[in-house]
Every structure is written in structure tokens, then in C-alpha cells.
Image (cartoon, rainbow, N blue to C red; front, top):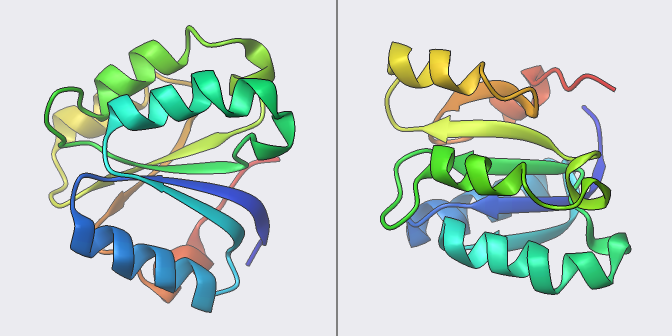
Length: 133
């Protein structure tokens, strides 16, 4: 399993965030984990903090699809407009509670999306995750 320095976890479900953050730590999957409770907060973080400190650019982003205000696809639509210094490196893994074929097809439309996982995350799912270089 790959170890990523910077992991960005975006999910509006606080219980999932606590559980997924701990799991990522226990699995040795990520060193620094930043948790954002919404797509809006994540975009603000990327635009204001990460753009000024490129050492914080995530290696991998776990992105929930179903969130209020701006869902995962709305996040991606705005994310791809950010400077390439922020969007070039991160790989996006979409997270969902259900496996909706339309969501899966829509996710394939974004080259940044490398995988689609059904929540909750598990050590097995993280171990099986294939992230292209």
C-alpha cells in the first residue's frame, strides 16, 4: 500500500470523517490528513491555504459525492478551474454510500478521478486501491 504525504478528506458526515481519518492513519495510508466538512470549505482551503503553500498540495483527495450546497461533482467542476500547481498532482477517489451507475459514469468524465469506492472505507479497500503514478 502506498503512503501519501498529504491526504484531503472531504465529507459532510462527521462520523465518517472521524472513522475515515483514523483508518487512514492506522493503515499508514497518509501522513498528514486534512478533513473538510464540505466542498465549499475544501475549495476555500485549496484557494487560500494551499495556493500559498504548495507543500500542502494533496497527493490524494477522498471526495464524498452526496453533500449539501455543493456536491462532489460541483466541487470537481470548480476544482478543475484552480491553478494547475494545485490540480496537477492530486488523484481523486470518489466516495459514495451507494453504487449509482450514473455517478460512476459521471465520475469517469473527470480525468482527476482515479477510483470510485463505496463507503465506508476499510483497510482492505485502501490496500486494494490502485493509484496511477
